[in-house]
Structure formats: structure tokens, C-alpha cells
Length: 218
Image 1 (tube, rainbow, N blue to C red):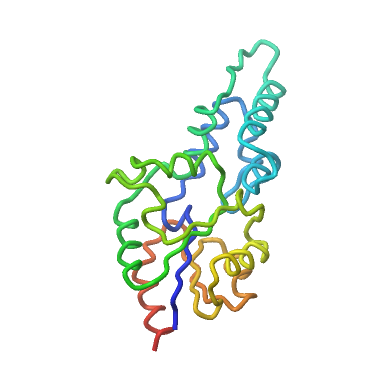
Image 2: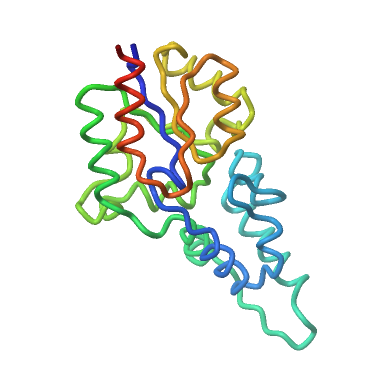
């Protein structure tokens, strides 16, 4: 019997638009943004801020260093501040579709609905505002509990992030269903006995989820 449903954020709860993020960081002077950032995981300072190894302030400092190093001799590179860095990060998840959020509220009536996301504090601050949904609610309104990689100092697809979530939430793997658009993340969860649903990026997952819940709850 499934009691807990755990969602990934980008590509599942919110549509994922990586090209927009890459373009924004490149416009700030990070000319190799596409090489440092990816669909299912980051590298370098982008990874370090998402796994909690460096702070927002340290990330901004390193971002400015990169922009200056990549600039041509005659190129005027503007200083990147918090607002600019957040704007660039938001490119990943700038489109909030209310119907997806409302599906979470429907599920909350029966299940313990949680979030497990590789994410950074820039995006979390934006998502924590009442203006996030366009309907007057922050991201946390739609979940019973949220787990963020930068706070946990863990990163999917490491199995350790799932172990921490299970322990901190006091849930059982066999009573839990995890949805993610990353195949490696799904396989990692399965190693611990968690039921999974691998959804295609930006797919409408509600029909598939309903079908799987009916099967698992027979």
C-alpha cells in the first residue's frame, strides 16, 4: 500500500527549460554555461551550490571570477549580483503551470506528498514567495514536506540522499512511490526498495500516476 508520493521538481512538477537558463548565464558572461550545467545535474560551482558545498555569496563571487576570466580584452563585463544570478537560475523553472500544482493538492487529500529536488537556494527563495504559483501560494503549500539537495548536502542520483530522506521523514521504502524524469535517479531509488515512476521530461504524469497507484494499492 502506497502512503507516500515523492516528486522531483524540474521536469515533473514544473516544466524544465534548461536552454533558457543556459542563455541567461551566457548573457552574464559565463560563456561555457552549457558545459557546466545539464539537464540532470551540474558540475563545478553549479554543483557545489546545489549540494551545499558553497554558499550563495561564494557562488556569486566565483561566478564573477569566471565572467571576468572569459571576457575579451575590450569587453565590458557587468558585475553579477544576487538578483542577476537568481534570474539566470530561474530560467530552468520559469513557467509555473497551476494545473500541475492543483494535482498535488488532490493527492495530498489521501497521501503524504513530498518533494526531493537537486536545487539551489536561489530557486528556493523564489519558490518560497506567495507569488510563486500565481494563485497566492508558495511551493511549500503543495507538499507535506520538502527535501532540498543543498540543505541535505547530498545530490541525486547518490543513494545516500534517498536514505536521508527515508530516515528524516520516517517513511518506509515499500510504502513510497518516487517520480523523476531522470533515469539514474529512478534506478538509485529502486536500490532501496522504493517504487518508482520514470516520467518523460515535462510529461503530464497524473494519468500514469493514477494507473500505477491503482496497481500498487490493489
